[in-house]
Length: 408
Image 1 (cartoon, one colour):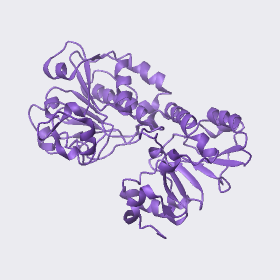
Image 2: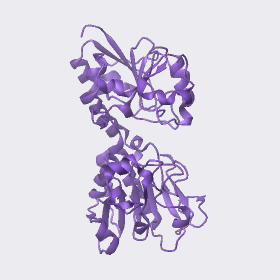
Image 3: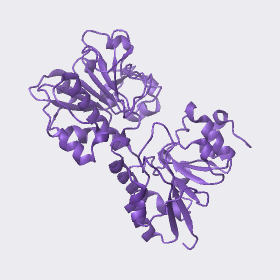
Image 4: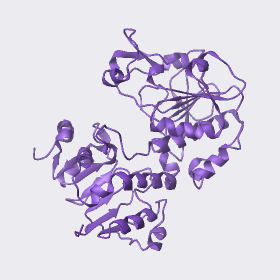
């Protein structure tokens, strides 16, 4: 590879601030050894979890103006006023599902003939994502569920995850707490997010039990149960559960979740939810006298979606609010024991930015960067390219009306 490629690491501009990076300083050094014709530049930032000095120490140049870079990499959405015409960008764009708050950003990318490669759609031929922060959302989300439980019961105290130096410190704190005998924690989902949640909960030496036992037995030790859609939905015609059918036709299913609300103390919601799928529970369900859930960590964070108590997303700085089961209204956190304590942070990996950034960077190095810097137009890169040279790519033409595409 003789052609010189310049890669710029963007300063994060979305509010609230995100401290993560796509590549750590040591990873950039390793990439420069692998690809001597690739140059990396770092836009200065005073919020990034890896400081400017950490990059400079390894002789990676800090540079405000990245206009001579070919590829620009960030994590979250980019301020639309800062796009540089004709460049290739990689970040989590959140436009492919017609997210209204990013419509103008998408229009600006079309106008400036940006090439957008969205991390979320970098997949294998079988549709499996190759880069994601989901595991870290689960790891931190489950920790926040336990932290909320400790505050609510005044039984133990955990420091906020973002105040921990790293994952090791966070988990070391968990090993010091004592959970109430008989406590029942439920994790919904079977993907990366749920697996991350289970990693954290296993640090507490919770006994893992089956769905049937979780529903029918009480324990003298704290327990956890992980369930998938085969447990919390059922076909409206009574047919046996079929995962592929559920994914393709979720509207054919109804909720079978209410049985869990009667026996669960802490819910860690880590599932994927399709808007055509049934709700988990409604405000009327939550108002029932036998509704037992007192803490909900909604990692999935579908606002006004399947979990009635998720009224809005919360922030790392202010992670909790209370949901009044009787009125369906938000109240200040921890004001009433009868309320549900809700955690619905939508950027949880940002609480452990160094660990999650390092993991994400390794995924990029393993699966993506060779094709990217060698300009190898791999099917994977093509699947993740949403706009290019002023046009939506063929697989994203469904966004034409949403974006008001220029120059069809």
